[in-house]
Image 1 (tube, rainbow, N blue to C red):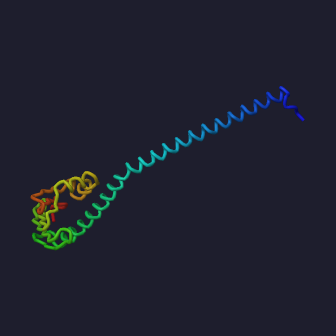
Image 2: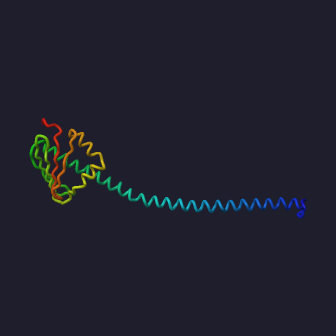
Image 3: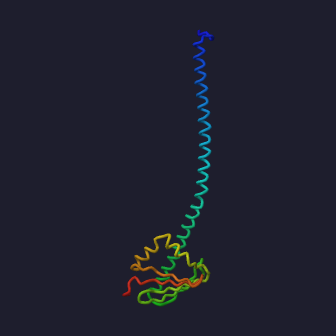
Length: 170
């Protein structure tokens, strides 16, 4: 048995207690450091979530606008098939626009389409905005030999679309 009054034993015991206290203090420092880091990470993640919510709303709005544009394109394609290069007028009723009248006046190098809607929903900047945000202008240039259709807004119920001829011999 080791006597407790032995100076060598007391020296070793004091070293062991010092090491133990040092380890406990390091563990406490690591605990509080990790705790504060995790809190800051949680705050940063919540800020990121808050800041990305408008992006989700913009994506939803863009998706809805794409769907509306596609539906309107399908309706216009149907109406344009009826016109098929002749002067004429087609009238149909759409749920979101009411009564829509589409008239075509072909010329040698372009065709004027006059679109009149019952509800005042036509806005001048919408198509230009979509053209800037998508590749619509490039597609139009491909279809119409480097030219793009022109849009003239008379008022919120009337628009004139001037489409260049893709083949002037027809």
